[in-house]
Length: 318
Image 1 (cartoon, helix red, strand yellow):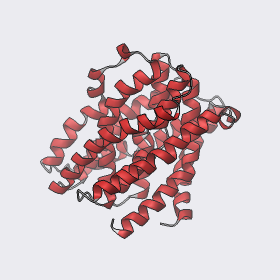
Image 2: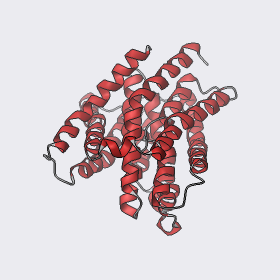
Image 3: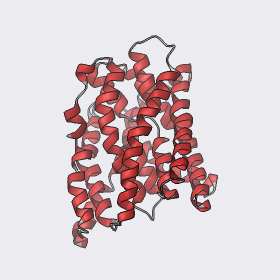
Image 4: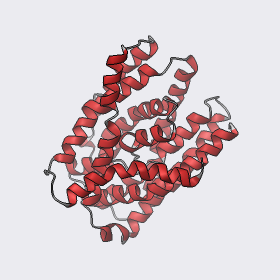
């Protein structure tokens, strides 16, 4: 895949954010509109996308092994990314802004950006999306525990119950049995579900456009610490991830597609969960928003670079 072609693909994807950006700038959207879309994605379109992806993917014992490895590695890579980000800001004073910066440096948008990007760059394979869903299990555990503590500094806000009892994790209780039992759905039903699940990508990008319209550019591009957080998130963390994944591939035959999928998932911009949880638990939501939007903008360049690296890895069969 040529770099220019990869950039074009990302631009076409990001172009879906334009309607949300314009309508928000024109003040045509109600205040709770983006929150409503987020709820729709979390409780409807993303769960449906998860189910249809598993139903359409043939069950193979080797794929189950890869999913297990991805689950284990996710539990290692996310805490490792947290440590890297924490060390980078170790000399900063402890406050809400520091919590937002550290969180923005390690927590990636595996669903709202990761899944759409993987679908764009791997249109002929459902495996990368499955890996993103499996990754999401650990992501949700980290979100309700480590993220909450990082943003607030208070353990009482952490919730093990919510870490497991959330829509993305619970939907696996439906998707996995269908996957293992090789259940096939009627074409009309599958087509309807595909339509609903297909809304995940455009709705996710519309939310991004709305968020972009809410921040003044000078607030993003004049903050040195936002640059540092973005550098960790988009450069350091994916580079470390790739090195670890290539090392694992030498031990376990997980395949280059699994390596590249995890590399790209960990290289996604900062998760929108950082700002949502900042607002919920009294963190610095303004600093969170700046980091999220800055990494989203920079990812227009970094995602094609990752795709180019990934394409070379797959072509080499590493």
